[in-house]
Image (tube, rainbow, N blue to C red):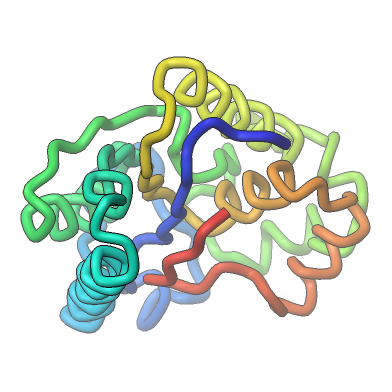
Length: 207
């Protein structure tokens, strides 16, 4: 997929649903808001340092690159954990945040707030059906991939030659990266099952 801009993706920082409540699925709607842990905040502050170092390194190697070497635009999911992540980055880089509902976490419908074991029992990760089978009152992986791609195509039409940071969640970013890099469903499934090359919490990647 040929893109007019440079894109970085960032998964939000650690939350309690990745520690004490790791056996449960995030609630939806996002109330009460799920905040980053102290470690999660630290993870994102480390990411900002990397972005700043990248800017300095590129300016040293090519002083004329100037604005092209920094993050020009930040787009984020509007869920609180992503908003909090975006705020940390934006304050350090002195940039405005644009929130977009298309960057929200995958909608698992009736399973939100419940135990993961029920969700995985009914919809095992290893099944290819997950790409097309909608969850009750939720969406399929294909649905999630489509909205993420629609977002990217929309942004890529509106801007040119910009460096853009996208802040979102694990599954949507996994599906978006796969679409941009033309990964097959088989490769995506392998990454999802083995968790090898699956974007980590607080991880920054260029796509």
